[in-house]
Length: 272
Image (cartoon, rainbow, N blue to C red):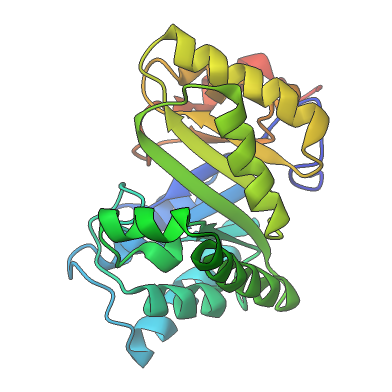
C-alpha cells in the first residue's frame, strides 16, 4: 500500500466507522483491501451520553478505541471527534476538553482531524464573528491552533485541519483558496474543506478552486461538496484538489453525498 495522500493519479480511499453502532467490530475486522485509511468517529462512542465530560476515564476510553482500531484493522487510523461547532454531531464538549482529547489522540492515532475553528466552539455566533473580524483576536486564535498542530506532529501524528460549511456555499473560488491557505499556514499536513453547494454555480466554484489548489497549494487538500449536487467532487482526484475521498463499505455514510467504494473502484482501478 502506497503512502497516503501522495499519489497524484488517484485519491486515498478513506472509510468512516462509528464505534457506537452495532456491527462496528465486524466492519473493522473485515475492511475491504482497498481501504487505506480508517476514520474512527469517536463522537459516536459518546452519543448515548450526549456529552464528553473530559474525565480521565473518557480519555482512557478514547485511547483504547483508537489503539484497538489500529490493531483490528491493520490500517492507519484517523481519529475524529466531530463537534457541534461543525454540525454533524450533537455531542457536547468544551474547547479545552476537545483540545486535550486531540492531543491525547496524537499519541495513538496516525492522523488526527482537528477542527480549524475549535477555539470558538463554545462561543455564540455574534461573539465569534467579532473575534474573527479583530486581527489581534484572530492572531491569538491562530496561535492556539498552530500550537496544537505542532504538538500533535511532535507526538507522531499527522494533522488534517478541517472546516465544514453547512450553509449554501461557496460563492467564489477565492473564498475556498483562502481557507486552504489559512490551514496550510497553521501547519496542516492535509487541508480539508467541505462545502454545501446549492446550485451548479457553487459546484463550479468549488471544482475550479480544486484545480487551482492542485497547482498552488503545496500540501495535500481535500475539497468536498456535500449533498447530491456535490457528489462529483467525491469522484475527483488530486488534480481536482481532492487527495482523499470518503467512501462507504457496509456502514452508513458519515456525511451527506458519500459514495460507495464500488463507484470509486470503477474510476480508479487497481492498475492505477
